Image (cartoon, rainbow, N blue to C red; front, side, top):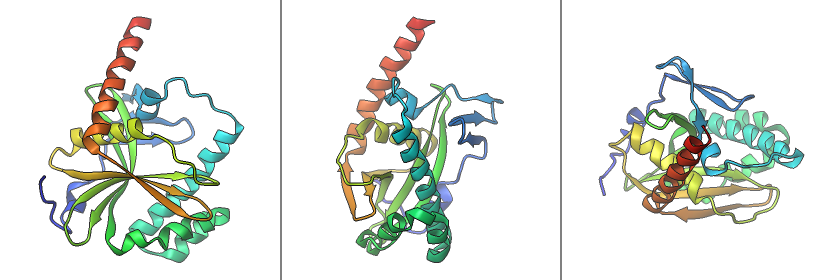
Length: 214
């Protein structure tokens, strides 16, 4: 495992200036190749996802909370972040006050990346760095009305794969799903290597089926 110097990783994890994201369409545009990216990590791991009204509401909530967290992580302005969160203030407040921040810092947030070999894009919620050891953790925020554990291994693996392709010098110690509810914060740990392996198996099957349909 490589050591990641504290304070240096922010310079390494620079945003790809050639990626543009259209949230209403949930589509990525590759400015380097002047075309839309064919697919996203979410499409690869959940190709037949059915969207209903409850899911649309959850997506809207997730967007607001994610953006409020990004404001807080980049500016450290708690009042501004909570003001932006509006009716989801309690969710964001719980996260900001969570004990995890005594030992971890957010060193990158909303990191958009493209796998230009397979034409897949995705947005990583955050990369955390341990304040003392410099170890890195990929973090994914999930918002829920009430905590319910789910398996996010494939999605996490997609982000690990993107990170490895775009920042090969970055070595992840762990991956963490952070469940945000109005009542509490829960976390669940995943192995980066195991998640990426499962995702790449899934990706191979997805691309194979896609090719068969052409």
